[in-house]
Length: 294
Image 1 (cartoon, rainbow, N blue to C red):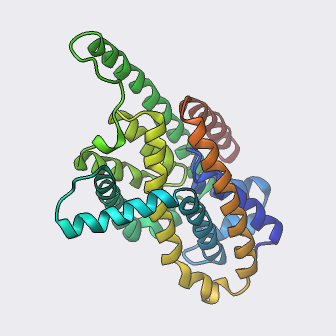
Image 2: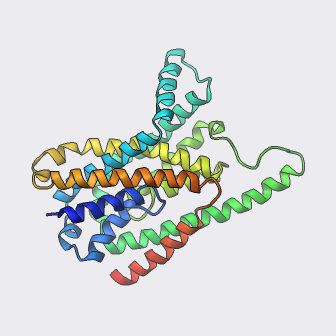
Image 3: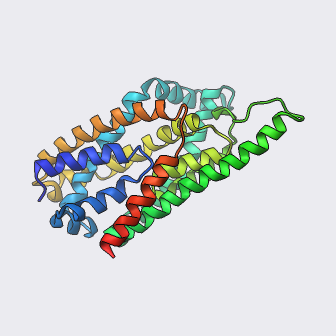
């Protein structure tokens, strides 16, 4: 089983790494083995286990914090969504953002239902997660490198024929671009690939700045994480969760607290900074874990 101390550590880990672009699933696979929590490590790779029931609460706690931070945005977005359906057309920026989020959510939602369980069983192993964490670092680094090249071209255009800005507004994205970001998000089904990281990179490469790419990533993550948690609630309420419900509640509360602090920090951070420190962390820590578990 899982102790209350372990529940607190795993909750804090989930709340931070779900939003920082370093892969919550990868860290939740690596850390139990790194700490010598072998019961948890074995339970993660099992087709059904108490740990999978416990993770439900961590997801719900994280999602509720995202809702708390962005509740004003979500009120506008949901209202705009139904307003656009009533009018049968998209006119405002909020209506457009609502449909961008719907379109971007579909690929991850479908593939998550079809493949999440199987991929978790196959790849929820420390060595595989460590390798994918290195891959995640490479994706973040490559995204920043490609962005710099794009900015160089934008500066040239800016001083030539086009006096416009170097980055786009979020509400200027096309629906097919949201689909591309949604497809990119499915990479997070592999332990070690960050949902927020890969969606941010996809947004950056569509011309968004770091702040808007992060905001879109967090908004996009909210329904996916919440749905993943609610979809698995029967596991927590059933026999698998019989002896971990108290630990799940504690873990969920700490996950919610860590997620709330993390998203507030990251929204400020990405106003002026980049993904590069997270890329370095994933490459260094992931590489060290590959050596550790090889």
